[in-house]
Every structure is written in structure tokens, then in C-alpha cells.
Image 1 (cartoon, helix red, strand yellow):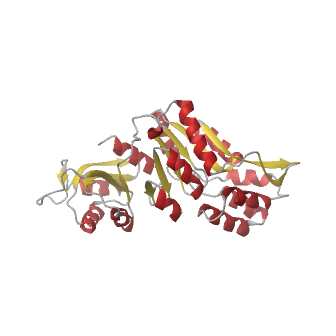
Image 2: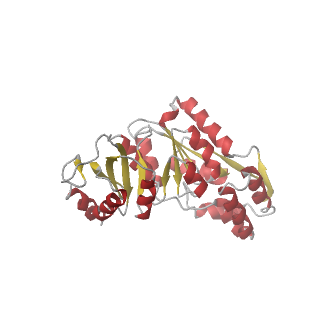
Image 3: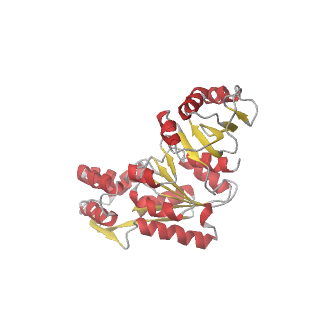
Length: 314
């Protein structure tokens, strides 16, 4: 099916660059951007062009894992984002520096970004306080509550729970689709990779070892006699901690900030996104989507490879 989608575009446009509407004047000296996704085909490309009302130039088409990626140039308007999302494909204006061939730094949030769950919500379900904790989590991720206060409240509800429930959650830890492929590809190109998580070391350190990441920072449960005390050990990894960690890693690895990416889904990821050369909102809360440079609403984590490979082609 993906080959058919890909060929539906390349058969109509066998040579590049060319105008989408072959017999009409195209936009000259436009700004580069990509449309990409697993559902992108010639029909969606044509519908996008019609919604935008511009005769874009198409410069390239390629595949990244299961994503079809189309490189276009035109006069950019922010409305393009809504038009693309209405068609269930992602879009990105290529006005950032990171590219695949230039080794950089990726810092990821963990819960609902590197993995498909919020660990503390799953722990709380096993401890019998799932509904209460998930309500607090949602509010915190929307930016309605101070992150540190909300974290301490959530951890407090777990007082007396057996440490063994952490193992039960970790045994069934669902990795985000595209995580392994993305990390392995970045590492092949010499990128440094890290997790900065408001979650917990029990899971973040496990992922660090599993994926051979360069660094991981997260919170630590206080445990006594095999039971959670309801307290967090040491400093809380909040938004400012994440931002400072990213800055420190850039200095440690000798990487210019313009070659760094921060990706996450919650309000506590915004500060590190502002420090990074590129901030990516991944299936994120509305507040995060409004402030991030790039929004990914449909693709999996291989969206990062789509973005970076595109910058190598302009």
C-alpha cells in the first residue's frame, strides 16, 4: 500500500523540480516545507494544493520508514497547518537548522513521547488510586497545575504501595512506535540521545540501557522496606530542570544549540523546547502545540527522521 501511495505521486511527477499544476505558473522563490505521513498520496496532495490555492513547486518525494515525504516550495501561511491536519497528514516549514547528516543532540520526554503511557498513572491503577492520579496528571500536562506540586501530590497517593508494582509496569512498558528506528538511525549518524523526564528513574534508566542512550534524567521514588513512602527523593525534574539539562549536555558534548532537538507532549517540555534549536510537540496538549515550532499530530516518532532528512535535501 505504501509503495502504491508513493508511486501515485512519482508517476504524475517523474522529474523535479516541477509545478504541481503543470500548465500554470508556479510560485517562484518560495519557502521550503514538507508534507508527510503514512496516508499521503496524490489525492491528498492535490486536495492540499486546492485548499491552499497556490501552485507549489514540488522538489522531491521520498520514503522514511512508512512515511511518504513531499518537499514543496511556496508562499507559506500558517493556515497550511490546519489544511494538512484536516487531511490527516503532518506538515513542517523547513526554517530550522538540525539535519540528519550533522550530528546533534536529541532530548526526549519519556511518558507519552518515548513510551505510550504515563507510568505514574499505570502505577496508580495497580495501587488502587488510578482515577485520582490520572486527573491530576492531565491537569499538570495541560499546564493548569505547577508540575512539582502535582508530582508530589500524585506520588503521595502511592504511600504504602509495594515496590513490586513498579516491576509490573516496567515488564509491559510499551515503546512509542518509531522510537527504536529513530534512535538507531540518529546514533548511526553520530547524534547524542537523551531522556529528560518528569517520570521516574525505574523506567528512564531502563530505557537508557535498552536503547543505549547517552544520558537520562528523571525523578526517584523514595522506597523503604520494599514500599513506596509517598515521597520523591532529591530534586524534582521539572520544566526548568529539563531546560538546564539540555543546555548542560550541549556544553558537555560541544554541540551548538542550533543542532539540538527537544521533543515532548506536555507543558513541562516547553522550556527545553525553547533552549533547543528545534522544539517538536508530539501528539501534544493544545498549549504545547500553540508554542512549539513544529507540531506532529499523526506520524510516529519517525517524524523526526522526516524532518531531518528533509533539511539535508534543501
